[in-house]
Image (cartoon, rainbow, N blue to C red):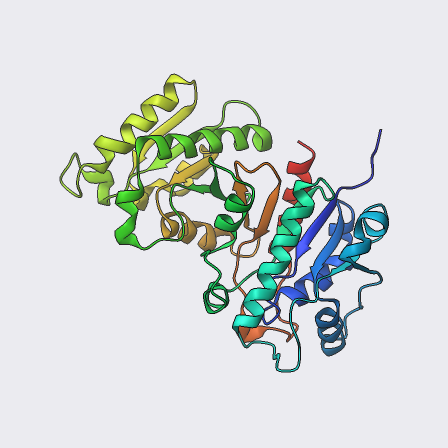
Length: 334
């Protein structure tokens, strides 16, 4: 029986952000090395430059993409899979550009390809800049949509996971005005099903889920909104219950996350981005993990942005990255 820890790729994220520093710290962190073999997918020259600036150890091993399958894949050491995706003449830490956006996208695409070929066990993504992606004319608003598209996944959703709270999302990176038209009984049920399956893998049988309402007071029986709760949310909950899933709701979001409710709930199904991200980041900003459910590969991520204001200064906390790697290890072995 193979008891060696799984090989997990860490995409470096946007080079101008805190990703390079966090990746360097992960390579040598005992709490990371005890659960996985971390491999950074990024630019080795950028990492060496960041290491020099912050007096951190440089990566011991560097592999080129052409030699990865023969050499790096079967090695036992950690290191860097070097993807030279941009020139560095004009690069400055903290400055988001189209070039850094293209580079971060190249790291992600490489990681997805390796995971689909089973050359790595999982992918943990560093923070990227949506602005940089847009500057580079890359037509994705974030990691979740990239992974879903590149793996041809029809059923997927974002999950924010922390010991204090777990939230999944029916819609993600869209404006508030777009949310109602993107809701349907089928989509809400799909996210409930994906959430229940994930919680069975992570917490055991018969998880208890809460579904939030869309409107204030969960619509107050049609008083607020356009009866989205009655037309969409309640039928989806009823269909989930027919499958034996334990679901409560729709509950008003302003009381759904109180301490007493969190103690009895395994996961909250949220209808839009901030409905769940606000409580997650209020309760677990440094420890929460972003993962995408429904993919044929395992993908987790830090639950924070590029933090360009503190990039390459030594101030970035690696807690979320370490937690993301631990969750990736658990999911890749489940």
